Image (cartoon, rainbow, N blue to C red):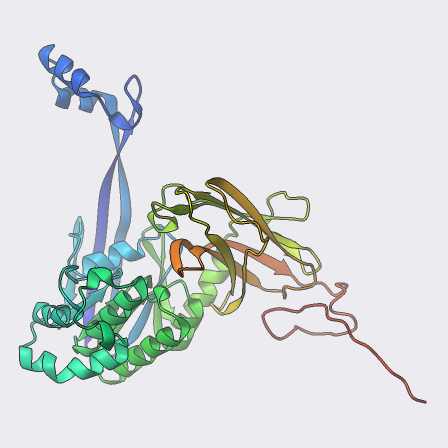
Length: 422
């Protein structure tokens, strides 16, 4: 029987949220003049802050307990805000828990965001040795893996370039290659793999599967439920900071999908990953043919996705794209805005209409990206933030006389032509 290498017991993490309760400025800010005036009056800024602000407890995690055996790939799944990233940061010793304990057996390598553990002024070569030292490896051990790391990351040409000049894709390729090849006993990976292209993602999944067969343990957070079903042996479902279910990967993913509520609108204002200083996604909405919010469609209904984005700098002309993902995490298809009219500085609203008799009777989620395709620079992204269900119907035009469930992720109504020769 394998021994648990990760033991999480009654783990909780609390954050304090402050709210302005009235009379003062929004968010509790004061000018220097106001602070000085209060101090002179003998009130003191600390006393005023206490009176004017209400503090709420927010539990990002609450009484989370589970164990992970050696040599397994375990998926951590759940909606945005469920506590997945907080859990990984505690396991990686980046954040201290409020209560509870975590016991880890062996060296831990974490890849929680692009360039984790990299120094931007150092070259790729120097950062490889730096990461090895952080993991407690000798220079000889790192050197023995050096060529494999470079081949996997495909950054040999830029090896002696400071990593601050790397693209996000180059960053994540090298960061994952270092974390995976320096042979930690526990590898913790967040959604950062979404930055890589499809071929790189396949390489990463293969490497994680190989690590598990070699007795190492992988903890993976991802919204790609297909990855979880295909690669993970076990999954932990978090809901509202608590463990909702622990079980085999396929059963846990199925439970998650059946229990999730559809989301027809999301406000991305202020979400860091949704934009940068040049352009940003602001809002996504699912609409019916009448342009009213909708999250349950019949197979013959058109599905409209509305994207609101802002161009913040002159001369920037980003294009939004919309991606549809099935309930198993499979990428069904994507569409890039092709109106032919470049985005202008300010607020832009575009709508994509998918015609009726196209989607199959499944549940789908929607991701959006905002990119300047002339430079391949991604200004912002929102991963699987909308979701909707399509109900199959025996009277839908695409079905005709066909009975039983349709195979595939879509079921388009296509033109057929017949010739008869009696």
